[in-house]
Amino acid sequence: MKALYFDRSAEIERLQNTLAHQRLAQSRTSLDDNEYTSRFERLDGAIKNVAFEIRQSWKSIPNWLTNVINAGAAVKGGREMTVVGRATISRWVVDEILEQFFHPALETMLSMQLKEIERNIRLLAPTPQTVEDDDALSTKVCNWRLTTLDALHGLINSPQALEKRTRLAEELVHKLVEYLRFHLQEPTPPGLLGGVQMVVDIAIGLASNLPVESRDVRVWYPLPGCRFDAKFMKGEGGLPPLGTPASSLPEPEKMQTDNNSNNSGDNVADEGPQAPPKDGAGNPSTRAGVAGLPGQQKQDTKKSSGFSGRVKKALHGAGAQPAPQPPPSPGAPPQGQGANVSKQQQQGSQVSLPVGLDGKGDVEKIRVAGFMAVEVRGRSILVKAPVWL
Image: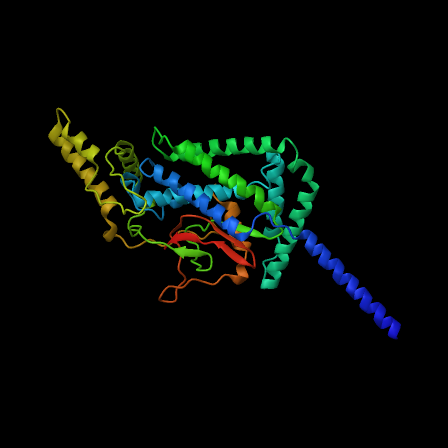
C-alpha cells in the first residue's frame, strides 16, 4: 500500500511538471501592456490628425453615421465633423486591417482565410454562460492561433515576408484614401496621403504583434446604439446636441445640403478639434447666387427663398422635432460595414459586461465612438473607447 501511495504521488508530480512546461512553452508575449497602450495611443493621435485635416472637406456623411450627426454638420465643418472623421477611420482600421488579416507577412488570401477561421472558432461556439466558459473559449482560440503560427513560422520569417508586408501596407493606404475621397470634396487636403500612411503603418505594426500573443487581445469598435459600458468606454463632451439627424432630410434637401457643402469650403471658419461649431444663418453661396440672377429675378428669388427657408428650417430646427430613437444595435450593422466587429461584440465577454445606466435606470446607448476599445480578455483593459452619448 505504501509503495502504491508513493507511486501515485510521483505520477501526479510528473503530470504537474508536464502541465507547467506546456504552459510555459505557450506563454508568449510580443509586447507588454504599457507598450500596447502606447502604440494604440499613437494610432489614436494619427487618426485625430487626419480627422482634423479633413474636417472642412466632407461632402457626404457615411450612411452608418447619418442617424447620429446633425443635418448641416458637413457645411459647418466643425467639431462634429472631426468626430465623424475619427469614427470613420477608426472603424475602417478595425474592419479592414485588424479583423481582416491573420498576419501581414503572409499572402493576402491565406491571411484572410486564416483570420476567418480564427474568428469562426469564437462566433460558432455556444455563447459563454459563465466567466469560466469565456476563459475556456479564449484558451481554445489562443491554442489554435499559436499552433498555426508554429506551422507558418518559415513563411512569416522568410526573406519575402517584409516585401509582402510592404505591399499590403501600400494597398491599404490606397484603399483608405479612396474610401475617404468618396465622401470628400475635390481637391482633397494635401496632407491626406501622409496622414493615412501613418495610420496604416501603425495599424500594420499592431497587426504583426497581436497574433503572436498567447493572451487573447480583443480590439473592437463600439457601434452607434451600443450600450454604454464604463468598463470599456469613457464619456466625452463638446458635441452639439442631436436635433435633426442628417438621415431625416428629404432627398431634395439632402442634395441641396451636399451642393452647399461643395461650394462653402472656403467660407467655413477654421476651427480646432475642441471648438464647437458655430451656428450659421444660411449658405452664403446660395444667397450670392440669388442676388446675381438676371431677368426674372423677382419671381425666381421668391421661389428660391421659399426653398432656402425649408433647407434652413431643416438645418436649424433642432427644437421643432423630438430626439430620434437610438440607431440599430450592433447586431444589425449598416450594409457593408463592420459585420465582423458586430459579431464579435455579440459573442465576446458577454458574461462580464456591466450595463451602463442613466439616472432613471435605463440602459444608456452611445451616439458615436471616436476610437476603438482594447482589452486583454479576463485580465485588463488597455484602452477605453472615447464615446459621446
